[in-house]
Length: 311
Image (cartoon, rainbow, N blue to C red; front, top):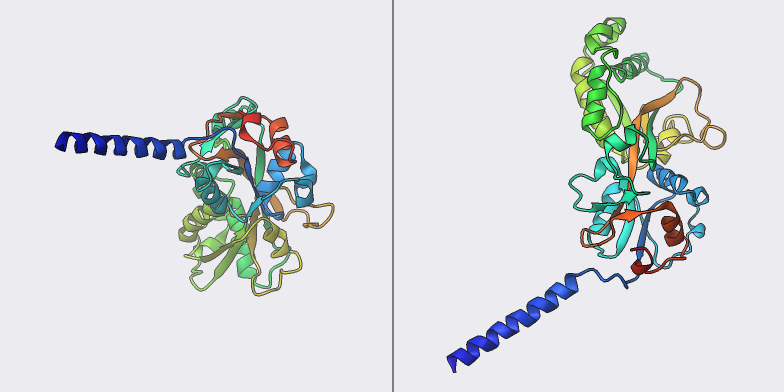
């Protein structure tokens, strides 16, 4: 009798173990769940421009998808797809490591820094900065000028690299020690000054790391950080909110500024930091390994609705 009970228990465990495994397995006949960033996102801009669907950069009506998930940050995208076996979306490559998501090859090329630099991986965009066109505080203006100079140095470029930015650090690039004499403002105490940074969530870690380093090089100046998206970059430095309580002294965007339309930034107030790649991501259980731009267009316009049309 004991043997029969023991055998029955083993069968019970084995059966429900298999059921558990089958519930965990990826079913290619399942519906695709699509995620996108909000319409102010620089990552969204770069993604839809890159796959040839630029009309969807700021217009969800182009996306003929039922149940489209819209998220506001890389972190939200990561969490959504981690919790959705059949989800697909896109994030900054700088956010991929440690996300526990699967980054797909794009057009047969793996998303690596080497492939971005050799230009074989083409789903990329720039990380850019913008500053105010005028400051009501001369001390702040000079600190920002010194910070912009710092961004050209080997030290700053190495920090950008360590935070996921893609760029070359050359032996011919200046060191901070070689140029800091041009900026006497850095020798003074600035512990009573706060510089306000914000903009793209994709650039936030890099911006915070650069600010932390520069603070000790410039009289312990303080930095505050408020990152809600690339749409804030122009708006809160030179646009409608430049004089609001949420104004920014310097901001960052993970897309190009719309200089000919809604973001006519003044010459000399904006520039490029580095390159970033955008990676198409899926849940770790997904069996898909590679994706092509025509497949992504068909997915986001509702032509492909099931995974077996892609895999």
